[in-house]
Image 1: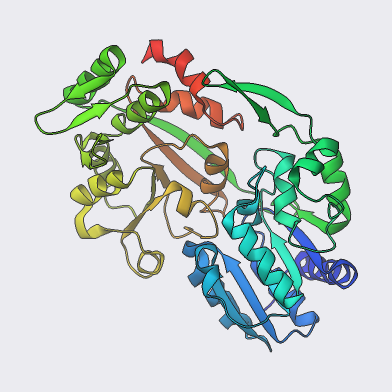
Image 2: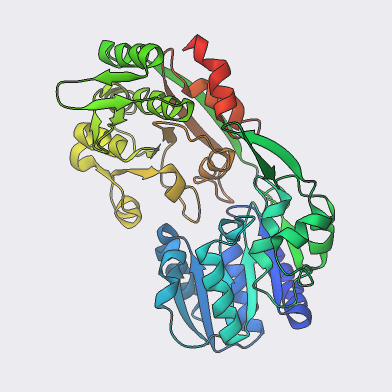
Length: 408
C-alpha cells in the first residue's frame, strides 16, 4: 500500500497530537483518504486492537482498505447502531463521520455509548469528518466530550458550555418560546485548533469540476390534483386511504412526497401514485450505469417498478456488475464511493444542506476530472425551491415553504 505524501505528513502530525492529548480530529474532505490515514497512524503507534466505528453503508469499503494495508493489528469494524454489541477493550478507536454525534443540547444515545467505550478502554481516539460542523459550531461539543482531554472538559454539560461559547437566542415554535443554541462562537473552533488537522480536496490536488443540470418532468394530472386539494382543504380522501396535511409541516412533507410521485397516507402506509420521474430517468439515461439518490422509501419501489433487475441498492453488486444503483440520500451520502457511475441522478432532494454537499461528492476521486449531476424536478413542484436553499448551505425550512406555497 503506497500512501500519498500528504497522508504521510498528516499521519505523523496526528501521531504527535495523540501522544500529547490522546485524541485528534481529522477534518479531511471526502475522497482525500481519511480511512487509510487513520490506519497508518495506528501502525505508527504499534497498537494491537482497533475499533473502527462508521456508517453501515461504509463497512465493506473499510474492510477492503484494512485487507489492502494488512497491518500488524486486529480491527473490529462496526456501525454506530450496533455499538451495544461491542465486546472487549481497544487501544485505538476511530470514530468516522463524527459529526453524526453532534446533537445538542443533550447527547444522543450513540454519543453516550461511545463515551462508555472510551471510558472502559482509555484508548487513542481519532475522530474523522469532512464536515465537522455542517450547521453550527455548537455541534463540536458532544463530538469530543467523550475524550477526557478535550478542551471543554471543565464544563459539566452542554448548558454550562453554552453560557460561555454560544450566543443564546430565543425563537418561537408553535407559539412557544424555545432556546436556540445554534449560534456557536468562533471561540469553539479556536479552542479545538490544537487537536484538529484540516485538509481539502484542493490541497490534495483534486481538479474536479462538478456540473449540475436540472431536468423538469411533467407529473400526472392526479399528482397535481391532490396537491391542489391539499393546499385548499388540508385533506384528500381516496377510495380506501386518506392524506392529511393539517399543519404546515405536514403539508410541506406531503407536497414534497407527491412531487416525486409517492405519498405516505394517514394510516402510515405508502404508495407509488405516479411513475413519471422513474420512467423519465430510465428513458433519458438508457444504457448508462448510473447512481440514483432518492429520499422516500416508496421512491425506490417506483424505480424498481421501471428498472427491474437492472437496479440494485447493494454497493458490491453495483461495483461488480453493469447494474445501476439507487440509495437513500441520508444513508448514501457518507462513507461510500460511486466512482463507477457515469453520472449521479437525484430522484428527489433532501431539505438538508449537509445531504446536498456530501452526496454530490460520491463520484469524486483523485483522478476524476468532471462529475455530472442531474436533478429531476417536477414541473411546478417544490424541489427547485429546496435546491435554491441548500446550494446556499441553508436547510429548507417551514418558513421557506410558507413563502413558496403561493407559487406551487
